[in-house]
Amino acid sequence: MGTEPIRCSRCIMPSTYPGISFGQDGTCSICQHFDRTLGRWYLDERMRVRAGERLSRIVESARKKKREYDCIVPTSGGRDSLYVLHLSATKLNLRPLVFTVDNGFWAPEARQNLEAVVTALGLSHLVYRPDQIRPLAGLFFRETRDFCAPCNFYIFHKTAEVAGRYGIPLVMMGGCQRLDRIMPIAPDPWQFRRVMKSNCPRDLVREHRQLDSHYFRYYLRGGRRVQPLDFIDWNHEDRRRVLESRYGIRVLNEHEDCLAHETVSYLSSRTSRLRRHGMTFATLKYSQLVRNSVITRDEALERVASSDPVQPPASLVSVMEAVGVGPNELEGLLCQSPDVQRYRTLPGIVSGWWRQVCYRHGLGDSRFFPDL
Image 1 (cartoon, rainbow, N blue to C red):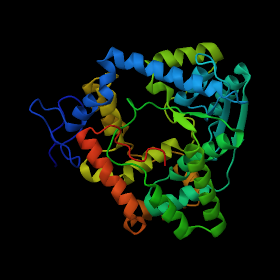
Image 2: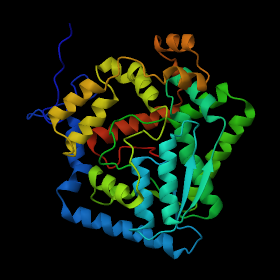
Image 3: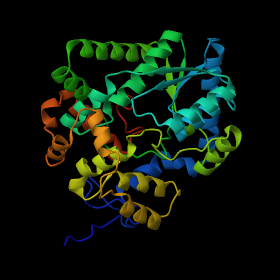
Image 4: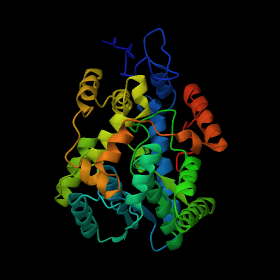
């Protein structure tokens, strides 16, 4: 029976995590990095004031362009992006275009919630349904064990393409750096391209390259993307109360807007590279919530212990068959590690190294390529 690893005295990060170190008080280098960067939000009132002023300037700049839409909000009815949509249209007085990428697993209740908000606010809503997301999810799971990579690609890249087409100056995203998982690893866009090039038909690779081109062109020509929740004080319960009372909906929990979320959670727990270090993504997630004083350290330990799914969810077979992976193939894939080394590239290696350096030494934003 293995011994329990030493854990940070503040969060729950274990000593087995690569590159981690501990100070004399027992706090880990990740907590120390947080305090030097994002954690200053809670200690420096001037930082919060400046953040609000900066958001106001960004919003005013978008309004001054006097386009049909001031911003685009990509959302499928999840709790973060739904609140950003509400915030954009009400508190910030922007004219948003609502944009949804339907990955084939869009939960009906999330769709109904989004329709209720869109109708109440009188907004325009575009829905994009690419047929290739499901087979690509199967491909990327086979090759890299990253089920969600194609969906994330289309959300970011197609949003930029639509924003460029309509001349929209601002992309408003859900999420918040202070609460999102912080780790010195990130999606590798070069690996994504190599997987596509090695396994997909030429017409699909060509479409991918075109979306890449639209993405970079939009941001090089002055398009901006922000997470408004980075600039304001908020908490989950207040947000939930506002949305439910105003729009008469039940706000879903994290990731419940996707019918595949339980399957993805199970697959991640089985295949994550973090397993070899005696932890899962839940460890990262709940450690970050502890740093933000959202939950206590004891609560984080309890949640990690209960969040590791032992039994496969009821949706596992149907979701995997929808992406072209049968039960027998799935069992084989879960028992072996993917050969991702053949998809590595020099730019990906360099960006990963730079992220590690920034992360360990607190050099600004450690996400070297946060958008790809």
